[in-house]
Length: 334
Image 1 (tube, rainbow, N blue to C red):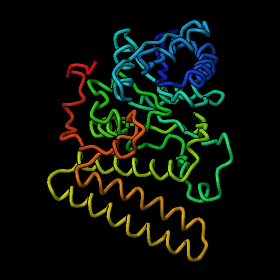
Image 2 (image 1 turned 120 degrees about the horizontal axis):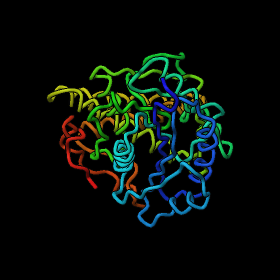
Image 3 (image 1 turned 180 degrees about the vertical axis):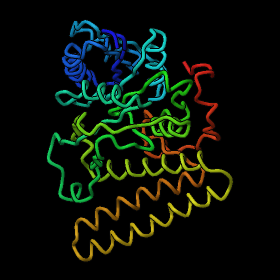
Image 4 (image 1 turned 135 degrees about the vertical axis):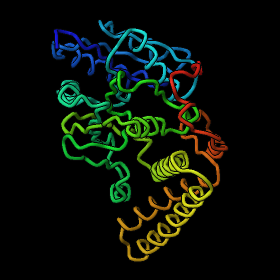
């Protein structure tokens, strides 16, 4: 490759977290200026706050090679698609995603780029490590609610999340993040699963680490169980998308109901025997199963809905998650 023959963008989505996004942008920019000579890099912040709280916080840093755009349409899919549009319009080759509360470990960016260069994969997924701002309760730790598996270096994965992800836009083609999942989540899993189904490879970069700093308000039983319900609901909806017919729906509903029953039984046994791990992991399984069962009943849990009423997050699931609904050929939701 010739010098700066590849153009890459690190995209950071944010909403009402100006202090966190400012810190993350500074850390990412420090790695951008030390990037390998064969790659030209920039940082793109997509602020989902129409008032521009994140944009103003980033602008105050006065950093070169950092720009910010406002995406007024609510939802994480709209933000991710805006990043795709911005990079495609500028002729970029690679798009990396990192969360606005993620902390890139030293060498993160270089390792992601080198793994892509070595493998020419359609996507590279790095590891997300978990750290706590405040010490979680023994029950939270026993349940392993924030644990993420660290796979072998170079292992191929069937899907990946956007907390630490590189996408090769040439191989991504016309794929976009499904706006029907903009408030429920799972848009990244759907896109990457579809990418693999179309023949793309996702490789794991074990030493390209982003640290997830878990906020204090998330280290509660209520939050972690709601998150498991959301994850189960997303998994069920995606199984319905990739499956076909009433048999798939019955399998999702039965699988969810079975997990609820087994999980509650384990939690009960854990409470009787005072086994904290069995108790916590039983509730974790039950919550995930409840989310799957809701998907089987045609309901979606909108984790990212901007509402203070929990039950208002439960809505009718989108009728179709067909591939055509998230191709670049469709008009943008903006």
